Length: 94
Image (tube, rainbow, N blue to C red; front, top):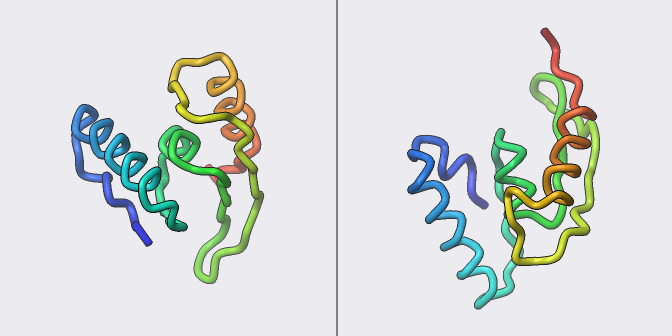
């Protein structure tokens, strides 16, 4: 389980660490629970995104299966379309 492991990193280091997580995952094929507030990061690294809502105890608001093949590119049309869809589905309280 990784809880916001890249939260304090600059953009370049974050990208390198994402690549390292993918490299390790490709070798080990172990399940990783990755907690992040960054939807782009979740979409890039994950196979499934679970959106939580509410205060503790939180509730599952939505589950998005990620059908994109690997390797993924942050700027591909399919990646950006899915990112937009997930962003639009999130109901943020203002």
